[in-house]
Length: 290
Image (cartoon, rainbow, N blue to C red; front, side, top):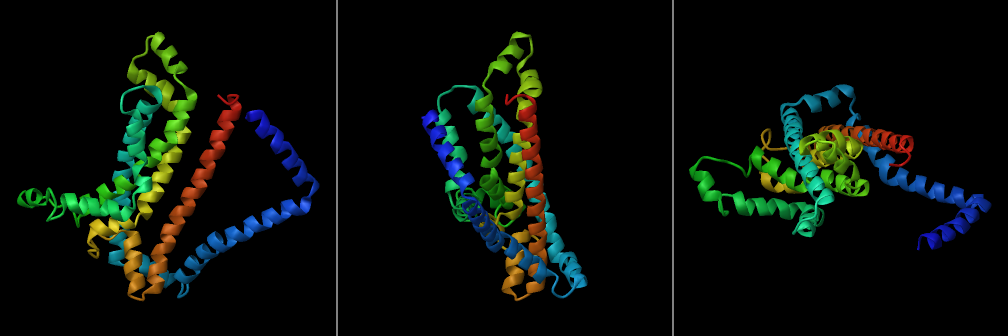
């Protein structure tokens, strides 16, 4: 199969080399697609945000409700990302390095948020923790508020984002095998020393990559958070929810100002992701691909 794929790729490369017009046509199509669906919308967001000047832009970002939304978004990400980091590392280590009953089921459960709509995830939390839910009466009797409060937003965000770290680490750990860990154990290292000095350094770039993706999704999550937040202005609105409210109230400049901040965070994440990929490829090349 590999030799067939290699032999099929050679004529294709030769054909592209002989037909420069085909190469430039494909490049032009790709650039046109990116410009239409990526660059142009981003430009429109920033242009609309700055339409009334930089003073109006700053006023929109420093308005109390906007500040509350920014703080809440950062708080939720600061809680959800470390939780997913710990879970992702543990789950990936267990799946990639050990054989146990239920391993396939664990992998399936990790992939579950990719196939379940975020809105459905939010409704599940309503059904469990809401006032009329399974645990609602008990929570109300103990004055514990989860739905329409910060804990519910954090739980919904964790559910939506928890596959990202694990899914980046599992194939990486599986590819590396267990030989280095076994050698460390033979040399007298305990389990924690083996993980800290052997396993973790080998997956550090993949781990950082997964954390970046997790953080980007946590800050931009809308569906699940919209269901459990209650849209309480200045209290349970994250930045995406605040953008929706401002837009529905025809406050377009303010809405695009907050949206531009989210877009800026996405661009920073993209740059960091590219740097991590570059470092990872450079490290692989330096170690001969191992």
